[in-house]
Amino acid sequence: MNVSYYWWILIKKFHKLILIISIVLIVVIPITISIIFLSNSNTFTNLDVDLYFNGDNAYTYVEDQLNINTTHYRKPGTQGREDCAKYFVSKFQEIDPSINYTLHNFTIHSVDCQNVLFKMNENFTNILILGAHYDSRARATKDSVNQNSPVPGANDGASGSAVLIELAKVLYNRRQNLSVQIWFLFFDAEDQGYDYSHGILGWDWCEGSTKFVQDIEDFYNSSEEHFDAMILLDMVGGANLKFISEQHSTSSLLNELFETGRQLGYTSAFPSDPIINSITDDHVPFVSYGIPSADLIINFWDNPAWPYHHTTEDIMSHISNYSLEVTGKTVEQFIYNNYLETNDQFQGNFPWNDDFNLPDSDLLTLIMIFLPIIGIASVLLIVRSRLIKSKNST
Ligand SMILES: [Zn+2]
Image 1 (tube, helix red, strand yellow):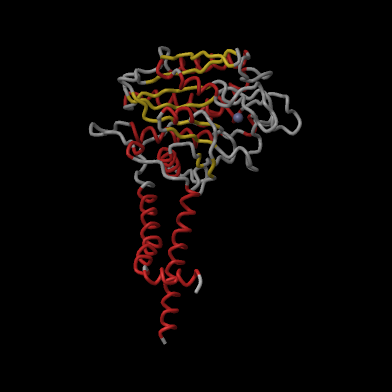
Image 2 (image 1 turned 90 degrees about the vertical axis):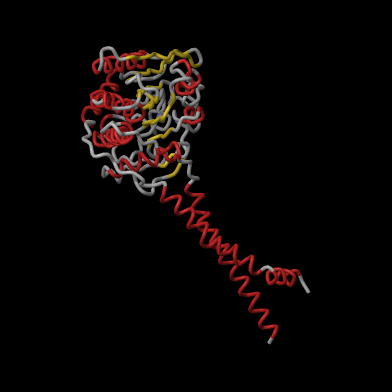
């Protein structure tokens, strides 16, 4: 008589129930999860349409931003930052002299900061936000030598902003066939947070986007207008572009961007097995506000293919016009897929509206592995208890 004896009695008594539960664990749950996965991927094909985003143009906009001020670059509170905001205004006025724009002023520790917002197609009540930060980091805290020097921020800041300018240009030419209001939103004060042992200005990350979302009701009419989605571009111009599966992002939206890019043939930038990580970035305040948001960003913390993050080497020679074009064309295609009125019947295609956030894929993999193991173990227990029973009865 011992504890395991009672255990065997229990197993024998309930062996049918255990068998049913085991079958559910082994078969039904993994199949259901697989079906959910499959039904959430590849449910659309890219619209067959010409794309006009030009990576060479975007490259020159990165270069322009770096040349604005080579002493402080676009450090918050400096002339360089101020002149960069003016540069955006001049570029957008080249596209449309009467374009509506707003300078969103705020202060962080009494330093004057400024987000810049341009609106296109304001007659539509559904809004798509395209965002990027444009400030450059005050100090190269990850540089092995020049930790007190400013970061030029060719990739970290200027690349996303450059893609927004080129996108504005190509989308403006098709604006009359796009059934959406588009915001081009440039954030100040994203990149001054605490890094390893270095606090810079005593600031947090994403100060500009946080302030913007605090004041967002000042920029739209919440009783008539609503936000479809927000797409953030951060470090999209480095050589060897490879986006990660960023976990604060709305996964259905990020998955759709990945699938859009993959269908364009950009399978290296949008890998089928991306690195998974959660990044504190400018999309997070928008997610918290309830807007489906996705961050297109690379592995910047441990990447031998792009080791220049927060160093003085974040410069033009490590920028690739191809990477800029991959990013720009993917977002351009995404917008046509969802908003280009190719005929009168076109209703738009908003998969994230009725989608849900899939759980973290690591967690899912663990569940897929462990549930069948538990199931198989249960079956083995039953078999063993049957064997013991038959042994005892002979
Ligand atoms: Zn940064």
